[in-house]
Amino acid sequence: MIKVVIGFKRRQGMGIQEFRDYRRDVHAPILFAIPEAKNIRRFVVSYPAEVVPAEEPRFDAIVEAWFDNSDDMNTLFQSDNFATRVDPDHVNFIDLTTVVRLVTEELIVIE
Image (cartoon, rainbow, N blue to C red):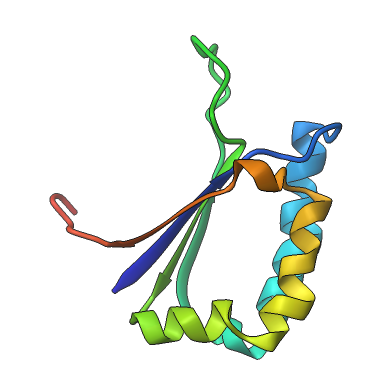
């Protein structure tokens, strides 16, 4: 199993709730409408907990997407649909200079 973890901040001038709503109501439907998204086995979005932080969180969201293997992951991210429909929408809600992406293999310690 391969997991992609992506962290990012919202685009400048966008409020946190506007960012969350846009990601859920506009961007997610674009992503899951393309046929290559069927390769995603699990998809989770995490937001910083609303507690009094000691400092500003580095990211406004963390996305985790699981795939059976790297070929399935590459089929999604290298597809024409992703390049022409999904990726162009990122600029509408993400500060692209803040994006950090890590492709991982999970080692489950406790379940």
